[in-house]
Image (cartoon, rainbow, N blue to C red; front, side, top):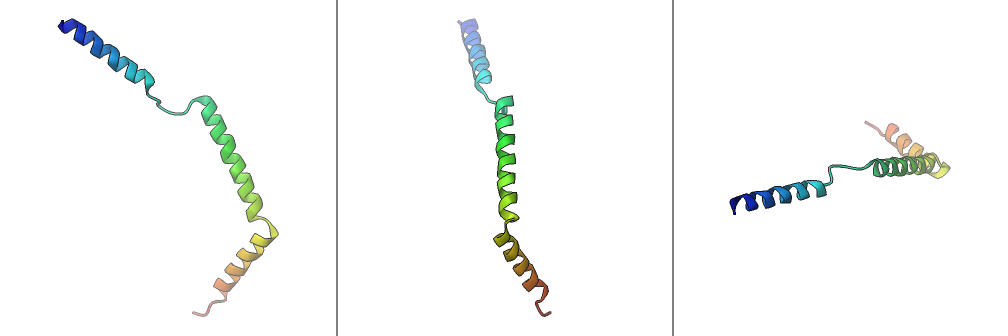
Length: 68
């Protein structure tokens, strides 16, 4: 009886260990990298657009012209 409980406990531990996800698989890592690169490209395009560039220049200009 004791051996049967030990074996069941051992198998339960092995099944739980097999179900755990220790990290991303190669496919998930590749998709995450592609998504991050795409987001960076969109962000770059937005930040280098004319309206955003003028707004940033305006904010920086006002900050530099502030009296101390």
